[in-house]
Amino acid sequence: MKTSITSYEKLEEFGRVRLSEHFFMRDFLHSEIAAWHGLRNIPDDPDAAIYAGEQLCQQLLEPLQATFGRIHVRSGYRSPDVNEFGNQNKLNCASNTANYSAHIWDHPDAQGKRGATACIVVPWLVDHIKQGGSWTDMAWWIHDHLPYHSLYFFPRLAAFNIRWHEAPVRRVDSYAAPKGCLIQPGTPGAPGMHQEQYVGFPDMDAPMVAAQTAVFAMQTIVRPVHDVIQKRAPQSPTAVRQGQIFYRAVHAKTAWRKVNSHQSLASALTGPRGARALLAGKAAIDYDTHGDALYVLVWEDGSQEGQAVKRHPTQPGQYQTAKVPVVTLHRFDAAGHASQTELESLFR
Image 1: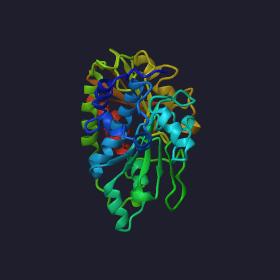
Image 2: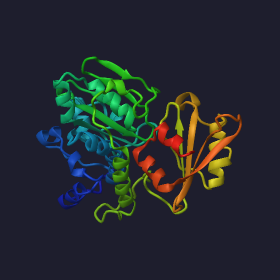
Image 3: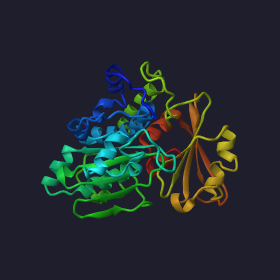
Image 4: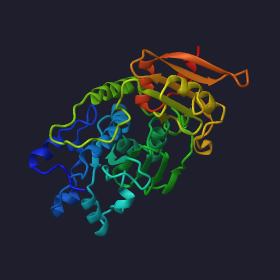
């Protein structure tokens, strides 16, 4: 695949692409490997890199920075050539195949899923550890609050890889002591669920963070195709078509599962793959992976209200529904989760 970035001017314009409120593509293009060895760290597919980078920044990095202050990006995007050179020369780079949808943002993985990784340092965490804390405190906080795919912690500066992915497994590993896997896939997480693991952490103003992210996401929706990069981008979860039906399921294991395949509200609510079938345990999904369905949220693009559905607490086989302002649903969707307290309050 040949990149469409064929001149300095096009690279300069690409670096100006705004991925979220505080992050631009240029923040993720620097590579010591590329700089020292004279390699170009330029994506084969710029629009695919932009799509994955937007999700990483909007869903993970912005909430982290809003809560803990300025974060430092140590490593972000790697081109296949740069990553392959790093792998072959033992410069702490995994193989290209392992890094597709990770550090190589513009190539999907073997399952066709998109993703993006950045290695970051959170100065707040560095100071927290100096005062007797542990990297594990941050791992549990992220697990409870953010829709991450995986985390990998390192000994120096408590740096860690944080990865967004279209099919998150939510796993945490570390080269720093205690080494190994801290959080296995399928471990439940929700705001406050493991609060004893991160005592003294600053409060996450979830509505504020979500609102900021949602505002930027709306700006991203109407962002024109880049004048310099003329390729068609993969469809982003934030890209909206007129009349689109949004369907979000909250499970015991998966905090926020997105489905955008329903063609009507009726299908999303009462169809064979709709809310009631899902809550009854009859939908064609992997319940072992996701856990029991607890809530379903459905809305249509352009509407002012959507619906929340759950099983009736005292009448088997019956369901409760509640009307929900779409602005509230957008807030949940931007955050990638909603607490059980927030969800239950919709039915009062």
